[in-house]
Length: 370
Ligand SMILES: *Cc1c(COP(=O)(O)O)cnc(C)c1O
Image (cartoon, rainbow, N blue to C red; front, side, top):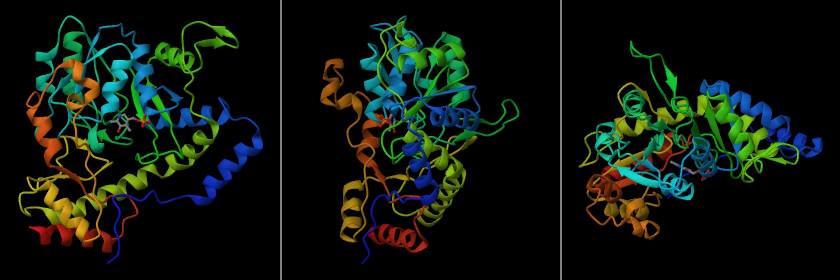
């Protein structure tokens, strides 16, 4: 029986990638050169914003975004209770306090109706995360932010290419273009992945873009002129060159992800107690992951493993129950919706080059469990 892994990082555009790498190698400019300039322009254009600044990782993109909006020590930032811990870590390392908000039961994303009750005089910003590639209800979240005078920083690490469609009031708009400044990651497994670490911010605000350009390069405003205490976090030329090639395929690969997700959803609808992914109203999902929920999560994972099928859990322990956040004094039961999700979610094998037989094998094995 063929082994089906959870994910395969299939090399694609082999020749174009090899050519890009070689031309950087031969060009002799490895940091802050024309490849990065070009990719930043392409990714800004793709996202529908004026500025993109490449940085060293998605985490750094979040951290520098928080610094660039002027977060002060002790400021509070609304974050999803149900997210990857990196979202919270950026807030903490920027000197802020993450204030978790429960997700919507259906979409698993930050529930906009629960934000207001967590706002205090110290609240500075909201970080919505487009979890698993499902766009958040950004129109409502932006409305809450306007009402309370808060900044919005989208964590778009899982949402490259996701969007809200035109709805009569609003035009179509991609995730990563709503907030004052937005962060994304090019970690290899993401929908747009580099050959190592990478990230970027996207924004329409010229001053924020300029500030992050300084912050990522030691706070230099020009050679050897250090204006503020910056860091070293630059997207290098090799990664930028590869990302330019891969960006050209993102649209097709996201379509392929949607086709596979639709096949799963059609075949698994109504099976056992499975809860299948629900897309936000008016949203276009890009399925970074295909995550189901079931009361028998561990048993289902075990059954699939016996059938030589690998699964994963995103994420088994929510941030508020991690040791690192013991000082916030949350306990089991503090965020019951999030905790139930952590106990019931299972990510099925999923990558854009999965073939029909592999999809059918997974579907059959899930069905045979129930
Ligand atoms: C991957 C990810 C990050 C961090 O990105 P890195 O490039 O690994 O630092 C942050 N937030 C979310 C939601 C992610 O999925």
